[in-house]
Length: 111
Length: 139
Image (cartoon, rainbow over all chains, first blue to last red; front, side, top):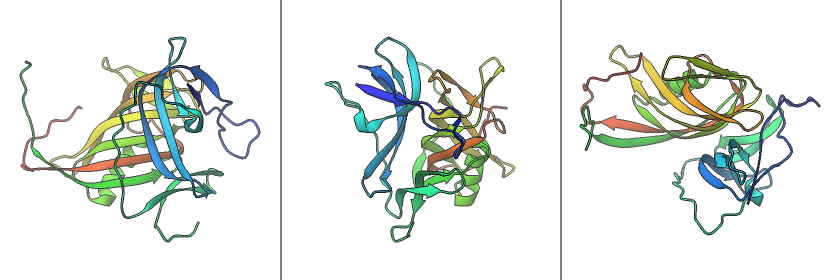
């Protein structure tokens, strides 16, 4: 089961775009994607993933995957992971875009 | 089996991860990242992020402009090469999703793909054994 969202302009302002309400893809096929593994602002593991999928209704769609609610079924997804030793990737507030996003930080660097 | 020509041997080198900021051009930013990190040759190992608008070129030379913001970058594949004149050129192809989730693909046009919120990109350095190998690039 999978939900994803897209990034249209944000009518409320504040940030240029805002993620849409979740779009339900149902039981779908994960075709291909990319992800960054990092740490959330609360210090928890976090996955930022964009992917192309085939939805339950047969449409090929793409967007930002809501990884917290995505459940892998019997057929596994193969991933190739590169780990990085010398710094960490942390979700930190970015004043330029006015949203929190992943940025490379030194391990001892304060936000 | 198909005939294979122009094979190249070598090793993978360093890894570089960067967060590219808004309004930088995708292709130019990847080239600049290679200049900053002193990667002569590199492959895109992974990338995701968003574009303000997207410009994708196709096999017949046609260019599709996709209106954002934001266009989500689903994936990028490609390489960066240092040419014989010392300049750095990135050839990037990939898949994007528009504001309704519809997907498109093609070559990313240099100068036509400004970053919207962020680009997270990982490059892997390629160290060819024969650095004098003639390098062909798409013009």
